[in-house]
Image (tube, rainbow, N blue to C red; front, top):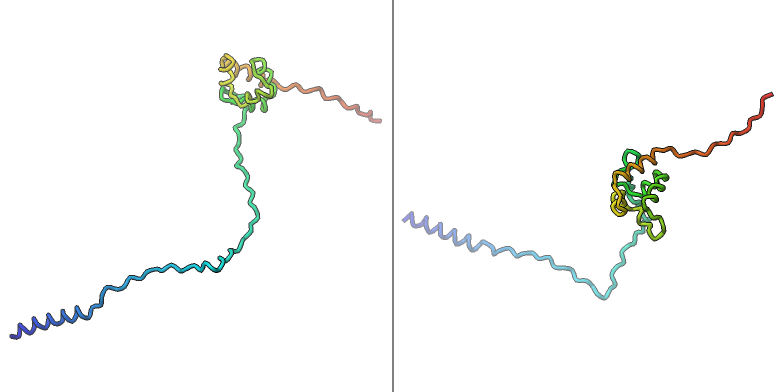
Length: 148
């Protein structure tokens, strides 16, 4: 009989445990706050900043030298660096009128293809002219006073 009492006491403790357990905890919900539509919204404080000046990045153009004149050289860059090459390009068919101003953005390859020229010969002619020194006008001598 003692064994039965032990079994009964176990059952009783289980029953008590069931009774004392509370139900599942209630889930808490975030309830959004109601906006009072009758009151105008508060105006945010306006912070004025001085305008920041954004400068475009400096893109360095590759420097054109006599050794770097190739078929992919732009005509405009070539004319700026070596002004005397204009004579060769005009002789070969370059038009520098206002309506043809886009020609200066063309490369030597495109220019030679449009005019039926060989790029190598055009580049050689331009390099020869670019190598010639720019003629300087003679500087007049200032008259010096004789020392007495």
